[in-house]
Image (cartoon, rainbow over all chains, first blue to last red; front, side, top):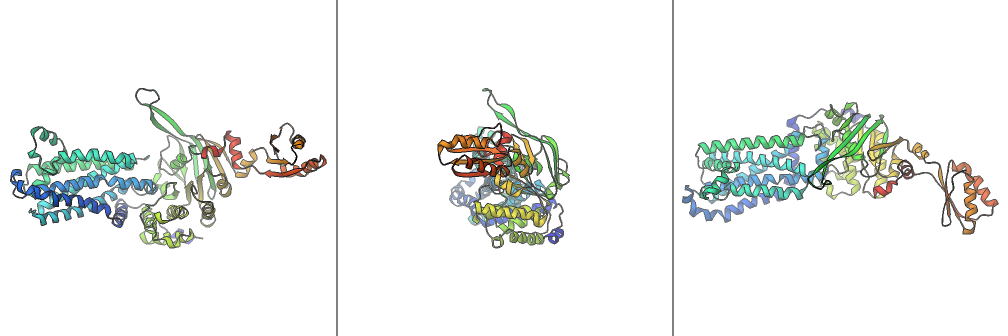
Length: 263
Length: 327
Protein backbone atom coordinates (compact mmCIF):
# COMPACT_ATOMS: atom_id res chain seq x y z
CA UNK A 1 0.00 0.00 0.00
CA UNK A 2 1.43 3.29 -1.02
CA UNK A 3 -0.65 5.46 1.28
CA UNK A 4 2.45 6.68 3.09
CA UNK A 5 4.16 7.91 -0.03
CA UNK A 6 0.91 9.34 -1.32
CA UNK A 7 0.51 11.45 1.77
CA UNK A 8 4.10 12.67 1.43
CA UNK A 9 3.53 14.16 -2.00
CA UNK A 10 2.80 17.82 -1.73
CA UNK A 11 1.01 19.13 -4.77
CA UNK A 12 1.03 22.80 -5.52
CA UNK A 13 0.63 24.48 -8.86
CA UNK A 14 4.20 25.19 -10.01
CA UNK A 15 5.01 28.84 -10.65
CA UNK A 16 5.39 30.27 -14.14
CA UNK A 17 9.14 30.71 -13.70
CA UNK A 18 9.54 27.20 -12.40
CA UNK A 19 7.71 25.59 -15.32
CA UNK A 20 9.72 27.70 -17.76
CA UNK A 21 12.91 26.49 -16.10
CA UNK A 22 11.86 22.80 -16.08
CA UNK A 23 10.87 22.91 -19.75
CA UNK A 24 14.02 24.86 -20.70
CA UNK A 25 16.29 22.26 -19.07
CA UNK A 26 14.42 19.34 -20.51
CA UNK A 27 14.67 20.81 -24.01
CA UNK A 28 18.33 21.68 -23.58
CA UNK A 29 19.14 18.17 -22.38
CA UNK A 30 17.39 16.64 -25.37
CA UNK A 31 19.15 19.00 -27.81
CA UNK A 32 22.55 18.25 -26.28
CA UNK A 33 21.94 14.53 -26.43
CA UNK A 34 21.61 14.81 -30.19
CA UNK A 35 23.60 17.92 -31.12
CA UNK A 36 23.51 17.17 -34.85
CA UNK A 37 21.04 19.97 -35.53
CA UNK A 38 22.94 22.49 -33.46
CA UNK A 39 26.09 21.66 -35.42
CA UNK A 40 24.36 21.64 -38.82
CA UNK A 41 22.73 24.98 -38.00
CA UNK A 42 26.14 26.42 -37.19
CA UNK A 43 27.98 24.80 -40.10
CA UNK A 44 26.01 26.73 -42.67
CA UNK A 45 27.02 30.27 -41.66
CA UNK A 46 30.58 29.06 -41.08
CA UNK A 47 30.71 27.80 -44.64
CA UNK A 48 29.39 31.17 -45.85
CA UNK A 49 31.97 32.91 -43.71
CA UNK A 50 34.86 30.82 -45.00
CA UNK A 51 33.89 30.33 -48.63
CA UNK A 52 31.92 33.48 -49.48
CA UNK A 53 33.42 36.05 -47.10
CA UNK A 54 36.79 36.29 -48.88
CA UNK A 55 34.98 37.29 -52.10
CA UNK A 56 33.58 40.35 -50.35
CA UNK A 57 36.87 41.67 -48.97
CA UNK A 58 38.00 43.38 -52.20
CA UNK A 59 34.50 44.90 -52.55
CA UNK A 60 34.42 46.48 -49.12
CA UNK A 61 35.08 50.01 -50.45
CA UNK A 62 31.95 49.82 -52.63
CA UNK A 63 29.90 49.10 -49.46
CA UNK A 64 31.30 52.27 -47.92
CA UNK A 65 33.08 50.42 -45.12
CA UNK A 66 36.72 49.60 -44.46
CA UNK A 67 36.03 46.12 -43.07
CA UNK A 68 33.84 43.85 -45.21
CA UNK A 69 33.11 41.55 -42.27
CA UNK A 70 31.18 44.27 -40.45
CA UNK A 71 28.69 43.93 -43.31
CA UNK A 72 28.88 40.19 -43.69
CA UNK A 73 28.88 38.84 -40.11
CA UNK A 74 25.70 40.73 -39.09
CA UNK A 75 23.98 39.29 -42.17
CA UNK A 76 25.01 35.78 -41.21
CA UNK A 77 23.84 36.39 -37.64
CA UNK A 78 20.36 37.25 -38.89
CA UNK A 79 20.40 34.27 -41.22
CA UNK A 80 21.29 32.04 -38.28
CA UNK A 81 18.56 33.63 -36.18
CA UNK A 82 15.81 33.35 -38.78
CA UNK A 83 16.61 29.96 -40.26
CA UNK A 84 17.63 28.15 -37.09
CA UNK A 85 14.66 29.39 -35.09
CA UNK A 86 12.05 28.93 -37.82
CA UNK A 87 12.87 25.24 -37.85
CA UNK A 88 12.27 24.90 -34.11
CA UNK A 89 8.67 23.95 -34.84
CA UNK A 90 9.74 20.63 -36.32
CA UNK A 91 10.84 19.48 -32.89
CA UNK A 92 7.45 20.46 -31.55
CA UNK A 93 5.63 18.43 -34.19
CA UNK A 94 7.73 15.41 -33.17
CA UNK A 95 6.88 16.05 -29.52
CA UNK A 96 3.22 16.44 -30.34
CA UNK A 97 3.24 13.16 -32.24
CA UNK A 98 4.90 11.40 -29.30
CA UNK A 99 2.06 12.67 -27.07
CA UNK A 100 4.37 14.90 -25.03
CA UNK A 101 2.49 18.13 -25.70
CA UNK A 102 -0.84 16.64 -24.68
CA UNK A 103 0.59 15.04 -21.56
CA UNK A 104 2.07 18.43 -20.58
CA UNK A 105 -1.25 20.10 -21.21
CA UNK A 106 -3.07 17.89 -18.70
CA UNK A 107 -0.75 19.07 -15.93
CA UNK A 108 -1.63 22.25 -14.05
CA UNK A 109 1.51 23.93 -15.48
CA UNK A 110 1.04 27.25 -17.25
CA UNK A 111 0.78 26.69 -20.99
CA UNK A 112 2.55 29.95 -21.77
CA UNK A 113 5.47 28.72 -19.69
CA UNK A 114 5.55 25.49 -21.69
CA UNK A 115 6.10 27.72 -24.74
CA UNK A 116 8.55 30.13 -23.12
CA UNK A 117 10.81 27.35 -21.85
CA UNK A 118 11.16 26.06 -25.39
CA UNK A 119 11.85 29.51 -26.81
CA UNK A 120 14.53 30.09 -24.17
CA UNK A 121 16.26 26.90 -25.28
CA UNK A 122 16.31 28.19 -28.87
CA UNK A 123 17.56 31.59 -27.77
CA UNK A 124 20.37 30.10 -25.68
CA UNK A 125 21.34 27.90 -28.58
CA UNK A 126 21.38 30.95 -30.84
CA UNK A 127 23.48 32.83 -28.31
CA UNK A 128 26.19 30.16 -28.38
CA UNK A 129 26.07 29.93 -32.17
CA UNK A 130 26.23 33.72 -32.47
CA UNK A 131 29.27 33.96 -30.19
CA UNK A 132 31.05 31.23 -32.16
CA UNK A 133 30.24 33.00 -35.41
CA UNK A 134 31.52 36.37 -34.17
CA UNK A 135 34.67 34.77 -32.81
CA UNK A 136 35.32 33.05 -36.13
CA UNK A 137 34.59 36.29 -37.96
CA UNK A 138 37.18 37.94 -35.77
CA UNK A 139 39.69 35.30 -36.87
CA UNK A 140 38.90 36.13 -40.49
CA UNK A 141 39.49 39.81 -39.92
CA UNK A 142 36.30 41.25 -38.40
CA UNK A 143 37.03 44.34 -36.32
CA UNK A 144 34.20 45.96 -34.38
CA UNK A 145 33.55 47.42 -30.94
CA UNK A 146 32.56 45.01 -28.20
CA UNK A 147 29.42 46.92 -27.10
CA UNK A 148 28.42 47.25 -30.76
CA UNK A 149 28.73 43.51 -31.33
CA UNK A 150 26.92 42.77 -28.07
CA UNK A 151 24.00 44.99 -29.04
CA UNK A 152 23.89 43.44 -32.51
CA UNK A 153 23.78 39.98 -30.93
CA UNK A 154 20.98 41.11 -28.62
CA UNK A 155 18.86 42.22 -31.60
CA UNK A 156 19.61 38.85 -33.23
CA UNK A 157 18.39 36.98 -30.14
CA UNK A 158 15.19 39.02 -30.10
CA UNK A 159 14.59 38.17 -33.76
CA UNK A 160 15.40 34.50 -33.10
CA UNK A 161 12.92 34.39 -30.22
CA UNK A 162 10.25 35.88 -32.49
CA UNK A 163 10.92 33.35 -35.24
CA UNK A 164 10.93 30.44 -32.78
CA UNK A 165 7.60 31.63 -31.35
CA UNK A 166 6.12 31.86 -34.86
CA UNK A 167 7.45 28.43 -35.73
CA UNK A 168 5.96 26.85 -32.59
CA UNK A 169 2.59 28.48 -33.25
CA UNK A 170 2.61 27.22 -36.85
CA UNK A 171 3.67 23.76 -35.69
CA UNK A 172 0.89 23.54 -33.12
CA UNK A 173 -1.72 24.63 -35.65
CA UNK A 174 -0.55 22.46 -38.58
CA UNK A 175 0.79 19.48 -36.57
CA UNK A 176 2.53 18.24 -39.71
CA UNK A 177 6.09 18.44 -41.01
CA UNK A 178 4.74 18.17 -44.54
CA UNK A 179 2.81 21.40 -44.16
CA UNK A 180 5.39 23.15 -42.02
CA UNK A 181 8.40 22.61 -44.31
CA UNK A 182 7.09 24.40 -47.43
CA UNK A 183 5.48 27.06 -45.23
CA UNK A 184 8.72 27.87 -43.41
CA UNK A 185 10.74 27.84 -46.61
CA UNK A 186 8.34 30.10 -48.45
CA UNK A 187 8.54 32.59 -45.60
CA UNK A 188 12.26 32.37 -44.93
CA UNK A 189 13.71 32.59 -48.44
CA UNK A 190 12.12 35.87 -49.60
CA UNK A 191 12.77 37.38 -46.18
CA UNK A 192 16.44 36.41 -46.40
CA UNK A 193 16.84 37.68 -49.97
CA UNK A 194 15.05 40.95 -49.36
CA UNK A 195 16.80 41.69 -46.08
CA UNK A 196 20.21 42.06 -47.72
CA UNK A 197 21.76 39.25 -45.75
CA UNK A 198 24.65 38.49 -48.08
CA UNK A 199 25.08 41.90 -49.69
CA UNK A 200 23.74 45.24 -48.49
CA UNK A 201 20.64 46.47 -50.27
CA UNK A 202 22.43 49.74 -51.09
CA UNK A 203 23.86 47.84 -54.09
CA UNK A 204 20.37 47.04 -55.34
CA UNK A 205 18.47 48.88 -58.10
CA UNK A 206 15.84 51.34 -56.93
CA UNK A 207 12.81 49.04 -57.29
CA UNK A 208 14.46 46.29 -55.25
CA UNK A 209 15.38 48.79 -52.55
CA UNK A 210 11.77 49.93 -52.34
CA UNK A 211 10.55 46.36 -52.00
CA UNK A 212 13.15 45.52 -49.37
CA UNK A 213 12.26 48.66 -47.39
CA UNK A 214 8.92 47.13 -46.47
CA UNK A 215 10.60 44.01 -45.05
CA UNK A 216 11.10 44.65 -41.32
CA UNK A 217 14.07 42.29 -41.07
CA UNK A 218 15.96 44.47 -43.59
CA UNK A 219 15.87 47.26 -41.03
CA UNK A 220 16.99 44.85 -38.33
CA UNK A 221 19.95 43.74 -40.46
CA UNK A 222 20.79 47.42 -41.07
CA UNK A 223 20.61 48.10 -37.35
CA UNK A 224 22.95 45.23 -36.50
CA UNK A 225 25.41 46.41 -39.17
CA UNK A 226 25.24 49.97 -37.85
CA UNK A 227 25.79 48.63 -34.37
CA UNK A 228 28.86 46.68 -35.47
CA UNK A 229 30.48 49.73 -37.06
CA UNK A 230 29.53 51.81 -34.01
CA UNK A 231 27.16 54.13 -35.86
CA UNK A 232 24.56 54.70 -33.15
CA UNK A 233 22.05 56.68 -35.16
CA UNK A 234 18.59 56.42 -36.69
CA UNK A 235 19.06 52.93 -38.33
CA UNK A 236 19.70 51.38 -34.92
CA UNK A 237 16.61 53.04 -33.48
CA UNK A 238 14.46 51.80 -36.35
CA UNK A 239 15.87 48.28 -36.21
CA UNK A 240 15.40 48.13 -32.46
CA UNK A 241 11.79 49.31 -32.73
CA UNK A 242 11.09 46.71 -35.42
CA UNK A 243 12.70 43.95 -33.37
CA UNK A 244 10.60 44.77 -30.34
CA UNK A 245 7.37 45.14 -32.34
CA UNK A 246 7.87 41.83 -34.15
CA UNK A 247 8.82 40.12 -30.90
CA UNK A 248 5.75 41.40 -29.08
CA UNK A 249 3.41 40.52 -31.92
CA UNK A 250 4.67 37.00 -32.57
CA UNK A 251 4.95 36.18 -28.86
CA UNK A 252 1.36 37.32 -28.40
CA UNK A 253 0.14 35.13 -31.26
CA UNK A 254 2.15 32.11 -30.10
CA UNK A 255 1.02 32.48 -26.48
CA UNK A 256 -2.57 32.66 -27.59
CA UNK A 257 -2.13 29.53 -29.69
CA UNK A 258 -0.57 27.65 -26.78
CA UNK A 259 -3.17 28.77 -24.29
CA UNK A 260 -6.07 27.91 -26.54
CA UNK A 261 -8.30 25.40 -24.89
CA UNK A 262 -8.82 23.13 -27.86
CA UNK A 263 -5.49 22.86 -29.62
CA UNK B 1 -15.80 11.08 -9.06
CA UNK B 2 -17.24 11.92 -12.45
CA UNK B 3 -20.63 13.50 -13.00
CA UNK B 4 -21.41 14.66 -16.50
CA UNK B 5 -24.74 15.94 -17.74
CA UNK B 6 -25.59 16.44 -21.37
CA UNK B 7 -21.92 16.65 -22.31
CA UNK B 8 -21.70 17.35 -26.03
CA UNK B 9 -19.12 18.30 -28.59
CA UNK B 10 -19.47 19.14 -32.24
CA UNK B 11 -16.80 20.15 -34.70
CA UNK B 12 -17.05 22.49 -37.62
CA UNK B 13 -15.61 21.10 -40.78
CA UNK B 14 -15.24 22.78 -44.10
CA UNK B 15 -16.46 20.66 -46.91
CA UNK B 16 -16.97 21.41 -50.58
CA UNK B 17 -20.18 19.46 -50.91
CA UNK B 18 -22.05 22.38 -52.39
CA UNK B 19 -19.67 22.44 -55.32
CA UNK B 20 -18.90 26.14 -55.31
CA UNK B 21 -16.94 27.58 -52.41
CA UNK B 22 -16.46 26.04 -49.03
CA UNK B 23 -19.41 25.32 -46.86
CA UNK B 24 -19.18 24.87 -43.17
CA UNK B 25 -20.89 21.83 -41.82
CA UNK B 26 -21.23 20.65 -38.25
CA UNK B 27 -20.18 17.18 -37.24
CA UNK B 28 -21.53 15.97 -33.93
CA UNK B 29 -18.91 13.83 -32.20
CA UNK B 30 -20.66 13.52 -28.86
CA UNK B 31 -24.36 14.29 -28.71
CA UNK B 32 -24.99 14.85 -25.00
CA UNK B 33 -23.97 12.09 -22.61
CA UNK B 34 -24.67 11.61 -18.90
CA UNK B 35 -21.89 9.84 -17.04
CA UNK B 36 -21.65 8.98 -13.35
CA UNK B 37 -18.64 7.22 -11.90
CA UNK B 38 -18.29 6.58 -8.16
CA UNK B 39 -15.04 6.56 -6.23
CA UNK B 40 -13.28 3.21 -6.45
CA UNK B 41 -15.02 2.03 -9.59
CA UNK B 42 -13.38 0.73 -12.73
CA UNK B 43 -15.60 1.86 -15.57
CA UNK B 44 -15.11 0.89 -19.18
CA UNK B 45 -16.12 3.09 -22.05
CA UNK B 46 -16.85 0.84 -24.97
CA UNK B 47 -17.59 1.66 -28.56
CA UNK B 48 -16.34 1.34 -32.11
CA UNK B 49 -13.81 3.78 -33.59
CA UNK B 50 -15.35 7.18 -34.17
CA UNK B 51 -18.15 6.59 -31.65
CA UNK B 52 -17.04 9.53 -29.50
CA UNK B 53 -14.94 7.77 -26.86
CA UNK B 54 -11.79 9.84 -27.16
CA UNK B 55 -13.71 13.09 -27.61
CA UNK B 56 -15.61 12.43 -24.38
CA UNK B 57 -12.39 11.55 -22.60
CA UNK B 58 -10.72 14.74 -23.83
CA UNK B 59 -13.63 16.80 -22.50
CA UNK B 60 -13.45 15.11 -19.10
CA UNK B 61 -9.69 15.72 -18.92
CA UNK B 62 -9.99 19.44 -19.85
CA UNK B 63 -8.20 18.98 -23.18
CA UNK B 64 -11.31 19.90 -25.12
CA UNK B 65 -14.05 22.37 -24.23
CA UNK B 66 -17.56 20.93 -24.42
CA UNK B 67 -19.93 22.75 -26.76
CA UNK B 68 -22.78 21.96 -24.36
CA UNK B 69 -23.39 20.33 -21.01
CA UNK B 70 -21.49 20.23 -17.74
CA UNK B 71 -19.05 17.89 -16.07
CA UNK B 72 -17.63 17.64 -12.58
CA UNK B 73 -14.45 15.60 -12.35
CA UNK B 74 -12.87 14.76 -8.97
CA UNK B 75 -15.11 17.43 -7.45
CA UNK B 76 -14.15 20.25 -9.82
CA UNK B 77 -15.93 21.75 -12.79
CA UNK B 78 -14.10 21.11 -16.07
CA UNK B 79 -15.17 24.45 -17.51
CA UNK B 80 -14.43 26.78 -14.59
CA UNK B 81 -11.78 24.89 -12.57
CA UNK B 82 -9.66 23.15 -15.21
CA UNK B 83 -6.43 23.53 -13.24
CA UNK B 84 -7.86 21.81 -10.16
CA UNK B 85 -9.17 19.02 -12.39
CA UNK B 86 -5.75 18.59 -13.99
CA UNK B 87 -4.11 18.48 -10.58
CA UNK B 88 -6.41 15.66 -9.43
CA UNK B 89 -6.44 13.35 -12.42
CA UNK B 90 -3.98 11.17 -14.25
CA UNK B 91 -4.33 10.85 -18.00
CA UNK B 92 -2.71 8.13 -20.09
CA UNK B 93 -3.37 8.97 -23.71
CA UNK B 94 -3.23 6.70 -26.73
CA UNK B 95 -0.39 8.60 -28.32
CA UNK B 96 2.11 8.22 -25.47
CA UNK B 97 3.76 10.77 -23.20
CA UNK B 98 7.52 10.63 -23.65
CA UNK B 99 9.94 11.66 -26.37
CA UNK B 100 11.53 8.57 -27.97
CA UNK B 101 15.01 10.08 -27.61
CA UNK B 102 14.72 11.23 -23.99
CA UNK B 103 15.61 9.07 -20.99
CA UNK B 104 12.67 7.42 -19.25
CA UNK B 105 13.74 8.46 -15.75
CA UNK B 106 14.32 12.09 -16.70
CA UNK B 107 10.95 12.25 -18.43
CA UNK B 108 9.05 11.05 -15.37
CA UNK B 109 10.94 13.38 -13.02
CA UNK B 110 10.25 16.39 -15.25
CA UNK B 111 6.62 15.36 -15.60
CA UNK B 112 6.25 15.13 -11.84
CA UNK B 113 7.80 18.55 -11.42
CA UNK B 114 5.19 20.03 -13.78
CA UNK B 115 2.67 18.99 -11.11
CA UNK B 116 4.63 20.98 -8.55
CA UNK B 117 6.41 18.03 -6.95
CA UNK B 118 9.99 18.70 -5.85
CA UNK B 119 12.76 17.14 -7.91
CA UNK B 120 13.78 14.75 -5.16
CA UNK B 121 10.22 13.63 -4.44
CA UNK B 122 9.54 13.16 -8.14
CA UNK B 123 12.59 10.93 -8.41
CA UNK B 124 11.62 8.83 -5.36
CA UNK B 125 8.10 8.52 -6.65
CA UNK B 126 9.25 7.74 -10.18
CA UNK B 127 11.56 4.94 -9.04
CA UNK B 128 8.78 3.52 -6.86
CA UNK B 129 6.43 3.45 -9.86
CA UNK B 130 9.09 1.92 -12.11
CA UNK B 131 9.47 -0.86 -9.57
CA UNK B 132 5.72 -1.45 -9.29
CA UNK B 133 5.28 -1.51 -13.05
CA UNK B 134 8.25 -3.85 -13.66
CA UNK B 135 10.37 -1.15 -15.26
CA UNK B 136 13.14 -1.35 -12.62
CA UNK B 137 16.13 -1.48 -14.90
CA UNK B 138 14.81 0.95 -17.51
CA UNK B 139 15.41 4.26 -15.71
CA UNK B 140 18.12 5.34 -18.16
CA UNK B 141 16.64 3.64 -21.21
CA UNK B 142 15.28 5.66 -24.15
CA UNK B 143 11.60 4.94 -24.82
CA UNK B 144 12.42 4.16 -28.44
CA UNK B 145 14.52 1.22 -27.21
CA UNK B 146 11.61 -0.20 -25.19
CA UNK B 147 9.06 -2.83 -26.17
CA UNK B 148 5.46 -1.77 -26.78
CA UNK B 149 4.39 -3.15 -23.42
CA UNK B 150 7.19 -1.37 -21.58
CA UNK B 151 6.32 1.90 -23.27
CA UNK B 152 2.67 1.58 -22.27
CA UNK B 153 3.71 0.90 -18.67
CA UNK B 154 6.00 3.92 -18.82
CA UNK B 155 3.03 6.00 -20.01
CA UNK B 156 1.01 4.72 -17.07
CA UNK B 157 3.85 5.55 -14.67
CA UNK B 158 3.94 9.08 -16.14
CA UNK B 159 0.21 9.42 -15.54
CA UNK B 160 0.54 8.28 -11.93
CA UNK B 161 3.54 10.34 -10.86
CA UNK B 162 1.40 12.76 -8.82
CA UNK B 163 -0.65 9.92 -7.29
CA UNK B 164 -4.03 10.93 -8.73
CA UNK B 165 -7.23 9.55 -7.23
CA UNK B 166 -8.78 9.27 -10.68
CA UNK B 167 -7.01 7.81 -13.70
CA UNK B 168 -8.12 8.03 -17.32
CA UNK B 169 -6.71 5.41 -19.67
CA UNK B 170 -7.34 5.82 -23.38
CA UNK B 171 -7.21 2.42 -25.10
CA UNK B 172 -4.40 1.19 -22.85
CA UNK B 173 -3.69 -2.11 -24.60
CA UNK B 174 -4.14 -1.19 -28.25
CA UNK B 175 -1.35 -2.70 -30.33
CA UNK B 176 0.02 -5.00 -27.61
CA UNK B 177 0.52 -8.73 -27.95
CA UNK B 178 -1.76 -10.97 -25.83
CA UNK B 179 0.86 -11.59 -23.17
CA UNK B 180 1.62 -7.88 -22.72
CA UNK B 181 -2.12 -7.18 -22.60
CA UNK B 182 -2.74 -9.69 -19.85
CA UNK B 183 0.23 -8.29 -17.95
CA UNK B 184 -1.10 -4.74 -18.29
CA UNK B 185 -4.56 -5.80 -17.11
CA UNK B 186 -2.94 -7.04 -13.91
CA UNK B 187 -1.27 -3.66 -13.40
CA UNK B 188 -4.50 -1.79 -14.11
CA UNK B 189 -6.50 -3.79 -11.55
CA UNK B 190 -3.66 -3.23 -9.08
CA UNK B 191 -4.18 0.53 -9.43
CA UNK B 192 -7.43 0.08 -7.60
CA UNK B 193 -6.61 -2.77 -5.25
CA UNK B 194 -3.33 -1.18 -4.10
CA UNK B 195 -3.93 2.55 -4.49
CA UNK B 196 -7.68 2.81 -4.26
CA UNK B 197 -7.75 4.70 -7.54
CA UNK B 198 -10.87 5.18 -9.60
CA UNK B 199 -10.33 4.17 -13.21
CA UNK B 200 -12.09 5.26 -16.37
CA UNK B 201 -10.83 3.49 -19.45
CA UNK B 202 -11.84 3.44 -23.07
CA UNK B 203 -11.48 0.32 -25.14
CA UNK B 204 -12.86 -1.36 -28.16
CA UNK B 205 -11.83 -4.77 -26.93
CA UNK B 206 -14.76 -6.64 -25.43
CA UNK B 207 -12.70 -9.08 -23.44
CA UNK B 208 -10.81 -6.17 -21.90
CA UNK B 209 -13.98 -4.43 -20.72
CA UNK B 210 -15.29 -7.77 -19.50
CA UNK B 211 -12.12 -8.65 -17.59
CA UNK B 212 -11.45 -5.30 -15.92
CA UNK B 213 -14.60 -3.30 -15.45
CA UNK B 214 -17.30 -3.11 -12.80
CA UNK B 215 -19.49 -1.20 -15.16
CA UNK B 216 -19.53 -0.61 -18.88
CA UNK B 217 -20.81 2.41 -20.74
CA UNK B 218 -21.53 1.71 -24.38
CA UNK B 219 -21.35 4.64 -26.77
CA UNK B 220 -22.41 4.60 -30.40
CA UNK B 221 -22.67 7.57 -32.75
CA UNK B 222 -22.05 9.96 -29.87
CA UNK B 223 -24.89 8.62 -27.73
CA UNK B 224 -24.76 6.34 -24.70
CA UNK B 225 -26.75 3.24 -25.53
CA UNK B 226 -26.14 1.34 -22.27
CA UNK B 227 -24.62 1.74 -18.81
CA UNK B 228 -24.62 -1.52 -16.87
CA UNK B 229 -22.46 -4.17 -15.26
CA UNK B 230 -20.99 -6.62 -17.77
CA UNK B 231 -23.29 -9.32 -16.36
CA UNK B 232 -26.44 -7.21 -16.62
CA UNK B 233 -25.47 -6.20 -20.12
CA UNK B 234 -25.08 -9.80 -21.14
CA UNK B 235 -28.49 -10.59 -19.73
CA UNK B 236 -30.00 -8.11 -22.16
CA UNK B 237 -29.20 -10.63 -24.82
CA UNK B 238 -32.03 -13.16 -24.60
CA UNK B 239 -30.21 -16.12 -23.19
CA UNK B 240 -27.26 -18.35 -23.95
CA UNK B 241 -26.49 -19.65 -27.39
CA UNK B 242 -27.04 -23.42 -27.63
CA UNK B 243 -25.38 -24.97 -30.68
CA UNK B 244 -25.97 -28.56 -31.77
CA UNK B 245 -24.08 -30.35 -34.52
CA UNK B 246 -25.70 -33.60 -35.65
CA UNK B 247 -23.82 -36.58 -37.04
CA UNK B 248 -26.43 -37.43 -39.64
CA UNK B 249 -27.85 -34.50 -41.63
CA UNK B 250 -31.10 -36.45 -42.07
CA UNK B 251 -31.78 -35.96 -38.36
CA UNK B 252 -31.31 -32.19 -38.60
CA UNK B 253 -34.98 -31.21 -38.69
CA UNK B 254 -35.81 -33.45 -35.72
CA UNK B 255 -32.94 -31.97 -33.74
CA UNK B 256 -34.22 -28.50 -34.63
CA UNK B 257 -37.70 -29.46 -33.45
CA UNK B 258 -36.33 -30.67 -30.10
CA UNK B 259 -34.42 -27.43 -29.65
CA UNK B 260 -37.40 -25.32 -30.72
CA UNK B 261 -39.53 -26.95 -28.06
CA UNK B 262 -37.44 -25.19 -25.39
CA UNK B 263 -38.37 -21.69 -26.48
CA UNK B 264 -41.85 -21.55 -27.95
CA UNK B 265 -42.23 -19.03 -30.72
CA UNK B 266 -38.62 -18.63 -31.83
CA UNK B 267 -37.41 -20.94 -34.60
CA UNK B 268 -33.79 -22.10 -34.39
CA UNK B 269 -31.17 -21.17 -37.01
CA UNK B 270 -30.12 -24.04 -39.23
CA UNK B 271 -26.84 -23.89 -41.09
CA UNK B 272 -25.31 -27.02 -42.59
CA UNK B 273 -25.38 -29.63 -39.87
CA UNK B 274 -25.53 -26.96 -37.15
CA UNK B 275 -28.66 -25.92 -35.28
CA UNK B 276 -28.53 -23.00 -32.88
CA UNK B 277 -30.95 -21.11 -30.68
CA UNK B 278 -30.80 -18.54 -27.90
CA UNK B 279 -32.16 -20.21 -24.78
CA UNK B 280 -32.72 -18.30 -21.53
CA UNK B 281 -31.07 -20.10 -18.59
CA UNK B 282 -29.71 -22.82 -20.84
CA UNK B 283 -28.16 -24.59 -17.84
CA UNK B 284 -31.59 -25.51 -16.53
CA UNK B 285 -32.85 -26.74 -19.89
CA UNK B 286 -29.85 -28.72 -20.99
CA UNK B 287 -30.61 -32.01 -19.18
CA UNK B 288 -34.16 -32.12 -20.61
CA UNK B 289 -32.89 -31.32 -24.08
CA UNK B 290 -30.34 -34.13 -24.01
CA UNK B 291 -32.95 -36.59 -22.77
CA UNK B 292 -35.33 -35.57 -25.56
CA UNK B 293 -32.62 -35.92 -28.21
CA UNK B 294 -31.65 -39.31 -26.81
CA UNK B 295 -35.25 -40.53 -26.83
CA UNK B 296 -35.48 -39.53 -30.47
CA UNK B 297 -32.30 -41.42 -31.27
CA UNK B 298 -30.49 -38.30 -32.55
CA UNK B 299 -26.71 -38.69 -32.52
CA UNK B 300 -24.78 -35.51 -31.73
CA UNK B 301 -21.35 -34.60 -33.05
CA UNK B 302 -21.13 -31.84 -30.44
CA UNK B 303 -23.16 -29.61 -28.17
CA UNK B 304 -22.01 -26.21 -27.05
CA UNK B 305 -23.51 -23.62 -24.75
CA UNK B 306 -22.01 -20.13 -25.19
CA UNK B 307 -22.60 -17.38 -22.67
CA UNK B 308 -23.40 -14.11 -24.45
CA UNK B 309 -20.32 -11.97 -25.14
CA UNK B 310 -20.24 -8.20 -25.17
CA UNK B 311 -20.08 -8.43 -28.94
CA UNK B 312 -23.52 -10.07 -28.83
CA UNK B 313 -24.62 -7.27 -26.53
CA UNK B 314 -23.38 -4.64 -28.90
CA UNK B 315 -25.16 -6.30 -31.77
CA UNK B 316 -28.40 -6.42 -29.77
CA UNK B 317 -28.05 -2.77 -28.70
CA UNK B 318 -27.12 -1.24 -32.03
CA UNK B 319 -27.93 -3.84 -34.64
CA UNK B 320 -24.28 -3.75 -35.72
CA UNK B 321 -21.29 -5.83 -34.81
CA UNK B 322 -18.55 -4.10 -32.86
CA UNK B 323 -15.84 -5.86 -34.83
CA UNK B 324 -17.02 -4.57 -38.19
CA UNK B 325 -16.29 -1.05 -37.04
CA UNK B 326 -13.16 -1.76 -35.09
CA UNK B 327 -11.44 -3.47 -37.99
